[in-house]
Length: 246
Length: 242
Ligand SMILES: Nc1ncnc2c1ncn2[C@@H]1O[C@H](COP(=O)(O)OP(=O)(O)OP(=O)(O)O)[C@@H](O)[C@H]1O
Ligand SMILES: [Mg+2]
Image 1 (cartoon, helix red, strand yellow):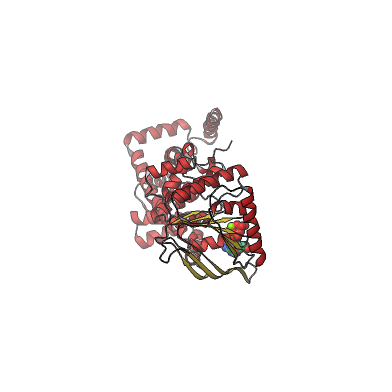
Image 2 (tube, rainbow over the protein chains, first blue to last red):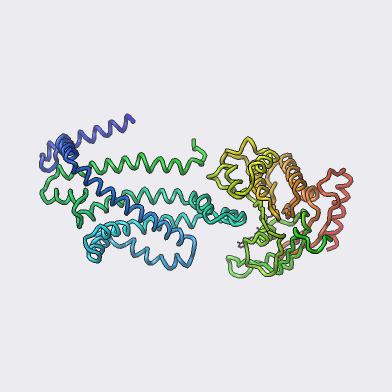
């Protein structure tokens, strides 16, 4: 913990020094950013924009995880599905995020649906590929066991398959979350009238580095909190049966 | 012979079973393997390693349908299987493992089972925290908890020390005596087979078939060393004939 605090303090110090060297316009000092954050928070703009972005992150993330995991599971279990779906996955994986976003806006208009679909489509193939890996590694012996004891489809899913996929789902979720929020900002920059990405876009046009840093830092802080208080506890819960390693 | 219409009867007639070998070609594992067990009888399959015992149990359990022949299961055909490895769900406790396989089992049944197998103190442990002996017992408890019509046991006591294997064998004998169920047991150990079964089936090397069938009078009873020696001699004679 102490090391972390020292490291964090050093970062702030380096920032201050950098700001002295580069000048307020290029790199405002920490106090300026803190002040702006306070003012944006008081006016409600910060909460409003953070909320809009978070909502998009949440919807796109859940959509991509659910659909991507189902696709990955089916592809990992059935050869035919794998052969059929693989070219699609390869194309989606290699399509630049920007292309998907621009095409979504062109085809579906500058709408919320287009924005969220574009983000979800960017994340979906990665989730599918990760979960497919997990589905390929499913223990045949446990499958046989479940079949012999005539476990219901629900019991198999809940107690046999999902616990085996948990590490893969966690990996997909972890990498997915950081990817999704970065892409959401781009989507907002290109075609939404609110959200952190939109604000940063406006600040960019006005060359307002203070505002850019304010929103970037606020949003990163929120994602860190989610990572620490939601993602990590969930991972710990899912792996509670593993014998502790010394 | 048991009467016709014996509800617990198991009829196995595997005409042919082969695997595609990785190098191309075919691996003929079972050929003309016929055996039957009356309801409530315990049969023991004794055969060399790799001859296809696990393959046969998988066919009987309906896990492998790629064979020629037919299997007649006991009525209702509720299956209890103890696999060669315990195959417990590592992320569920011992008790949850049993309950998931046997959701209809009453608390009283489970308590009695856990007590009979000495598992009471370990019910809340995860499989990773169990010794192999305990995990094997948990697998036995799971197979009995569903009150099966047919019990398949694949070398349930292998790689346990002799004393523990003997104890578990007694516990198993006790369980099948208390609630008779048609049982097919795979083992390498002739003494174990004599100690548990009504009927021994000796298997050849692959392609495997039954080379000798030895019925055992008074199964699961204490025997004098002389009686045991006589039984072994009889088995040796029958095997010699083939
Ligand atoms: N899925 C499979 N694909 C190809 N060959 C297989 C497969 N399963 C088993 N075999 C082969 O079939 C033969 C019989 O295997 P099986 O596991 O039934 O033997 P076993 O009698 O149970 O042996 P053990 O006593 O060592 O457990 C072996 O030669 C094995 O290599
Ligand atoms: Mg085997």
